[in-house]
Length: 353
Image 1: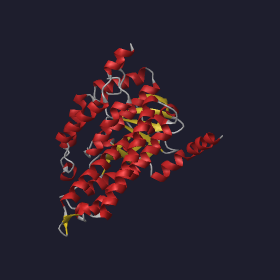
Image 2: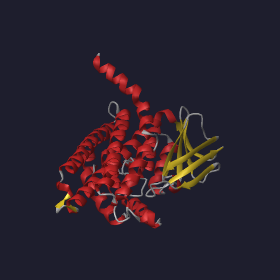
Image 3: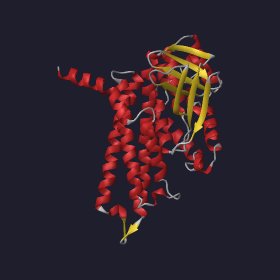
Image 4: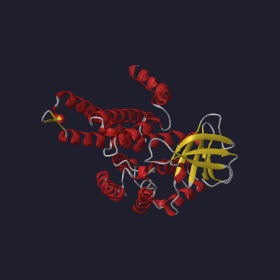
């Protein structure tokens, strides 16, 4: 049995190569600023046909039965290409539905596989619920067929985006490369399935935060690569600016920060895939470190390009906009630190006893 299961496993690096080839061919990072919405739709169609949304769905439910390890390089490549796709929303919701179990959840998973449902998680602030709630910015909401609405301390409900009492209005942010929407709820009806939010909220958050961490590592790596290429070609005083010691040190510092973030993200992803000890806290820590490394790289890239990084001919400003968005989705860095501070302190104290 073990041998048969191993034969079904997809090599993560093969998945990375396949994702990189597809995204290189299909993603035009400037398309959203040119008003080409069809670019995102075409990518979504290709991704659906290739079975990316089925990767972590169990075999018995029509999926490919893979762990998060196989999905991780896909998230990294999405970041590297500045892709307009919100794959993580549906995949995090699938993880939550698998954990919840039950006939209704199983049918919902089958619909993701067979009917192409696309799900946007909506984690409501305390005090809000299906009766009345409003979130100004929800990633992927305008393109979702369903919302997974999580009431903290209550229930999680899967509802159609067209259900009674659900309103989704597209919102324009500084990162036009991905879709966001304002979600308003008022006495929502027609719930597809409902389950205990306490069982799935940490899972939903951890998956989303690891996806953002991997996205940030991929984008930071690409930003660094393009910055170095530019510096090697840009001449000052008859020499490439990449030969200037001060600039070399700045680039080296970014390289170290990105690799440190990558190491933590890889470790956190592995622990999360196996549901090892501390997976929830590790996911948040990885997201904080990766987003900080990406933001620092993207911001400095504009300067290392000599100021032309904000011009349309170059891409540093696109990476910077994505980096700033990644830092605040689902909570600012300070809010994330406050959320995990108690667990981190308890584990630190326990290790000293």
